[in-house]
Amino acid sequence: MGIQILEELAPYAAGQLGDGPHNFVGSRVLQSDAPAGAFVIPTADNECNLPSAATAADLAKGGILTLLVDRNPKANGLEYAAGERGLYVTSGYIVGLTETAVNDHDPVFVRVRVSGGDPAEQIGALRPDVNEAGEDTAVLTVVTTDDGAVLRLEDGNTDLSFVSGDTQSAADKATAWAAAINAIDGYTATADGAEITVVKEGSFDFGSRSPASVFTLAHTPECVRLPGAYFVHDAAAGLALVKLPG
Image 1 (cartoon, rainbow, N blue to C red):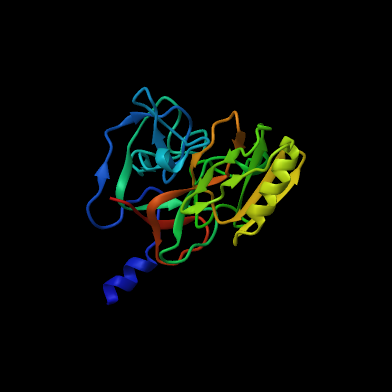
Image 2: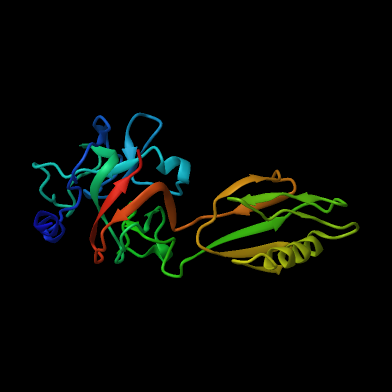
């Protein structure tokens, strides 16, 4: 018991490995400057980079950059510079950079886009929710005017689909679809012409949907859920121990 308390009180360092087995990825060249403890994903050319507009499927292939003994902060204030080789962990326990305080077993979200161009936000940093508001936003734009058009859209296990009426404009269909989405718990939808803004409590996990000839979907989240990952112990903003899946 005493050993456990000492471990919890020990200071963390970004990218520090926790106890237990880990799955390491062979060193990859980083395409941009990055700090230890940030989340990176592999790229098509066998390199890696901080995530940009990444999906949950993209993140499932990535991991957290480790702290190596020779990685003192460089002139950029970070441990890694673009063009250098980095090593990251895809499973096991590791200390990651966090934006907010976290609680034990909170889910892990990875920042893939800064909000409003805020330079203080670090792409690849972690947090326990999708953003400060705890809400995700998407924009649906109805294109079709066909009678009885099937507007098919799945969000995780929730079916947001709608079958439109006849002799309706795209704007009419959008108004009716927004009303149907509004009737689903956890969702708010407002129509403006043919465009619907949908806000969800939590994060979207879009699946099957109609082709772009029926409606288009614009979804650029700030943070994306890392499937199967969770924070270990309560921690203040800055650093926290993470259990990566696998």
